Length: 381
Image (cartoon, rainbow, N blue to C red):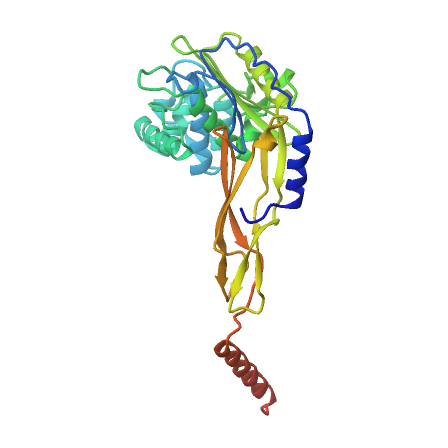
């Protein structure tokens, strides 16, 4: 480790002076599987059978929405395919040939949990249910949800349609980083037109936490006889965004609220480094300056419990020296922040300044270039 910022050294020193405080008791949880995750870092703050493969019912629609947002525009017009009309379960009562915007279908998908809306989106983007499921599975692997398999866009039971609490937390955390997704899943009421009727479809979000839990801002309920009650929920207080997953959980809202409250009571976001902060420096070879600062382009903020700061380890990987010319913003290495086996994140580090080359050849070129400019400026016009 080459250099620690002064403020971090102070924080580390203070952490040793502060008494160690143990975490509060984990919440009672009747779910078969559950995970509480901080969104920005992906740190798991609570878990119960996190990697058991289970059906997830309509929480499937989180991925359906991700695919739609990343492969279409909200104003795109979707013509309802015949395959989408009459799908069993929760419904918007879409008619074949009815036209709605993608945005309207997404609100119908996430607030009403319309299975027909899910199929309309799948047929529009994937051309078939199977084609859309392939898109979902590809994205799941990209996110890191490697124990998940989608067979349809709505979550109606299929023996090969499953996830884990951990995977669903990863998918939910990924989705909550999308501002349009957050806007949709935090909306309590929404209206969309209903062709052939003198009134609109009025949608009410089925997520009860939006009404009675502080900071609640998502995400999606799900239920089938095979899956039992499933809930992906989310809440943000100050600068900490959490997602909570419960699978096969009868008191789904109560247990999810207890998990989220446990997270807020026992963890806080600690800024270790700020954007643009110098974390190291390197020697400059053949340059007009002897040193160049190495900086971060992002903040590094971690969810920590009281006393954990003292256990943070920091490793820097960068060259001892860099040869000029140097361009500011060039990636030259990385910094890795670890907390045992609980957390590990890596961020790139970059050069902080432009540094010109200082050699006989480069100086001659500079003089020649300047002479040519001066000569050109004195020529008669």
